[in-house]
Length: 313
Image (cartoon, rainbow, N blue to C red; front, side, top):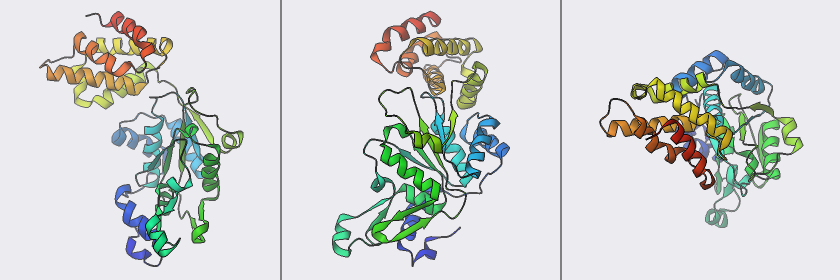
């Protein structure tokens, strides 16, 4: 692994290593599908199919970015971050998109006071996460890509396609040096508050759909995430939780994902421990339900009705 000492003649790279190397925490990359699946379960507490991981790895090998599409709470961000991290052998960077995201916020910009003193030089340039990922050969998770502008999307695709970043002010071209620099986008196409992705964007990505898992898989996710606290939850109450979640997915405006299932169960188990109980009971699940499941005021009645149906006080 190179250190900042090897970049004294390259000021920008030296800044990247000094600022970001300790954050990415390098380790030996995992490049096999089975190895990634196993480490996702062991290290990230994620249950991911071999098929999904194989599709992502195949996209990486042919130089295509990946788009994870699906409703909130289905694990898009966590799975993408985990795969990118294991593949590169470094913690992935996460770029949470917004309307005002532009190249200066993700590639780099010039420090105003330093630029006034030194001009637009490498000394006054401040590298940002996307450039850091390329220099360090790390992965990038671009979260909620639909919240960004079409110009921003096209800029990202151009960088991924050519595996390089051009900074005209510095007359520099930074090129990816390995296979670790990969990009996964996430998107919730059902969110009406976001924009559409262009045809050009959709043609250039490998699209992978995320859906709610089968009940047996969702139960396994809860068990994996709770660890020892799973003993505080009875099988009967787990079945009731999943029944509530599935009914709300068909009736409520906010569709609870597996993340909500896990959070609800964790909250109920935590309340049971605080109350000195050996098992979480109906009161614990009822008290925890609304803090986790009620995301929109319009859903208050339906959430109350469905929770009462299965967890009557």
